[in-house]
Length: 282
Image (cartoon, rainbow, N blue to C red):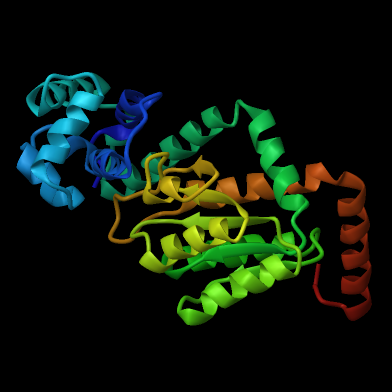
């Protein structure tokens, strides 16, 4: 559970901004983000165990961030935890706090979207891919299906990849053979190994990988060309995916904006077909 709050998490991410991290260091950074409040009071050995790395790796990570060792980094983490303070998200009962944290996550996402040009570029990239494979396994599968349901109304060939196993690589290869140039992936905790393997295979096959994931230092960052972060709520028994779902619809809007005439034609054709078949009551 993240005890640091949205502002504290933003400050923690700022520590990593502009620093070239190795895959191992990226794993440590992601561990600190996921355990933001508690990490400030953990030893280097405990952080290493949480991240699944060696203790010397934690020390090298602290030095890569400009500190003379992990104790200095831990002092900095404590400062961030303290200055983050108690905000509106700390008021009310546990359920209210969980919802308010989601509001913070959405507010943070809104701030990231200030660079509208970046999202517009992603929209053009995905709109141009025919077909457009959309990957989401396990907890991410419903988001991939939700995105694909609406995307299919404006894109001629959307292919959902929501099952792992040996057939997943085959379906990626088939999409490439059919002309795909990009892949949209939803990569959410607990990060299925098959998802990361599929991202690696997609890039090896020549696809440009766009990943919607929970953090800029998530494991997906090592296997994606474009990382679009949207925080996941962790205050309930199961994660809340409000911000990633919102970001998915923002990306779909960017796809529509990339080809407005084609989008309008396809939507009108769908509405005509829906009316003829009386699909909806209203």
